[in-house]
Amino acid sequence: MGGCVSISSKSEEERISPSCLLIDMFRHKRSRRTFSDNATTLQHLSSIPNRIFTNGRSRSSCIFTQQGRKGINQDAMIVWEDFMEEEVIFCGVFDGHGPHGHMVARKVRDTLPLKLSTFLNSFESKQNGSSANCCNGNIKSDVVDPEKNISAEEKVESLWREAFLKSYKAMDKELRSHPNLDCFCSGSTAVTVAKQGSNLFMGYIGDSRAILGSKDSNDSMVAIQLTIDLKPDLPREAERIKRCKGRVFALQDEPEVQRVWLPFDDAPGLAMARAFGDFCLKEYGVISIPEFSHRVLTDKDKFVVLASDGVWDVLSNEEVVEIVSSAPTRSSAARILVDSAAREWKAKYPTSKMDDCAVVCLFLDGKMDSESDYEEQCFSSATVQSNHSGNALESDDGQNSEPCLLRNFTVRSSEESDQYNRVHLDIKDGAEDQNWSGLEGVTRVNSLVQLPRFSEEKPRP
Image 1: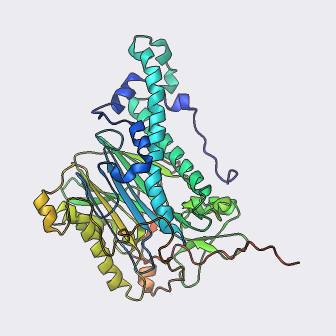
Image 2 (image 1 turned 180 degrees about the vertical axis):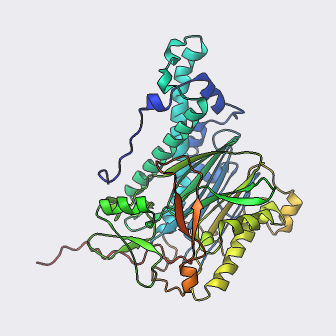
Image 3 (image 1 turned 90 degrees about the vertical axis):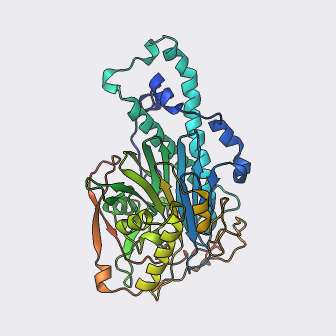
């Protein structure tokens, strides 16, 4: 894999130059709890306040998941308020695939935020050591080359970019060496968002998606896509995979779904170009390096929706924004969105097996409904379990029934199969500024067509 992808970057001294202004930005409204406090709670995640991962609500968000008809629910989600300081919120949606995909998704959900905070904590420690120079009048150590002089905002963005890259890399490394979790042909997507004040930092792999609901000049709600669906049909993704000797092609009965195949076997047929796990394909172009983007929020931006592809396969960005913005209460928005997706699956594709759906709705003004409004929507003020959510008996012991990996023969009309939308993504990251094509309204088949035909037995002579 090392020969497949290279990332050119500046040194840490250049990318993350210490400054008092930068330190002030990260200590703004800082709570008593520190990064290291989060790290010490690694074995007590369930007791961490303001962290929810099953159906329910927080101070500024609501989350909901529902199992599809393909087996155990392989989706996972999280909202962690006061993530590293009072004004930072971490959100994530993770869509597992393969025989152990549900376990991979939950492992990433629990571990990735901690790794992100660890790298941020490491940076803070370095800043604490160097801040005395610039804050005590010794300005010589803080003088930089004018050509390398960047604003504090750019330094903060560089920090988050580095933290996302390192945490994703460390997460995949841990999965590879995990003693009790087989990720050879199982994996997970990830779409993660950290909101710090008016800044939105995003890291993502796979085809889970984040969008923004915002008001336009006419005060009408519009949808802005924040992330790219990283599938093999994207030119740069396909080029990388082929350069690493992986193959990319679609099956005859699903010509619109490009998949990744081993060079020597028609397996496993992965329908995404980046993922955690899936180590059978990591030497052939599938990577876990995230795309990163940064957006500065304005008063016109109202909410962010993160969801797995079970939602995006049947609902457009505009439909999702309309559903969330018209929900009778904010605390019911995620549940109503999942219910709407379920109805669309039944109406559009009655012969298909509905996919799992997971949704996080983050309201950017930090306001939610009153407690009475919340209870009227059949929720509880505490974390809520659902009979069909797939999370009620959540366990990583692998004792749950395995998901069905049989090919999903979906019936589509030619009009639906040819429905391509051009979505312009306002993303600062990446060398190209281009329009990416994405399938909207086309049902998704299984992420994996079949298990690789590998055997540990030695071949016969």
